[in-house]
Length: 287
Image (tube, helix red, strand yellow):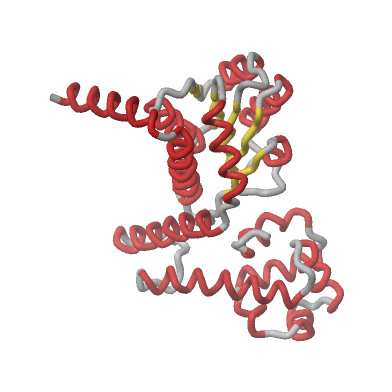
């Protein structure tokens, strides 16, 4: 189950009935209603039936309303802790926020994204992905726009330890590389929504060619997640007032760091040599 139930409610909205949508909107407007109200009271407030509220909880993957209440309470507590840390009433950025407030809200959102991603990490899946990267003949990294930055970051890290790894933001070049892969190779695709068409297509081609496929996404039931053999989930909420991916990018970069450290651990002592050589080369160049 998604650690951030409010993000889960947002993602599920398009699949809900009209009556269930009213329940979702009420919860997103004021999550404390779920914590404070019995199912009968919430149903009355939303102008719907007990069965609709129960069905809404089940559509999110909960056994019932009681389990939903516990999850919402946990999510609200985490959000309140981040707000209190920065002295904020809300972390949502508005058009009239000044620089200091924007900085505090972004910091709170990004710390929250890192903490949720770390807390929700599937250690066994990440370990399988790390071992696959160690054993791979070649590694392809796919990602567009902001997700391309996370792919580039992993490419730079893996290059430093001698891995055969490539990334191209050009979707045509990505498809060409994907088509040439075999069962000895690994393809890792980054997409917060899990629905980026170019990234999805590249991963599908790599999968069909025989490569082991890994998805890094914020949506567990996305097309990208369904395509991949291994799924690594990030957890980030983007403010409605935003110009580009912020929290989602930070969550991806945090997961990349964890994955890379695990790769280094599995590689063992031999990895120290390329790390030292690349470090010394960079230091010499700066001089």
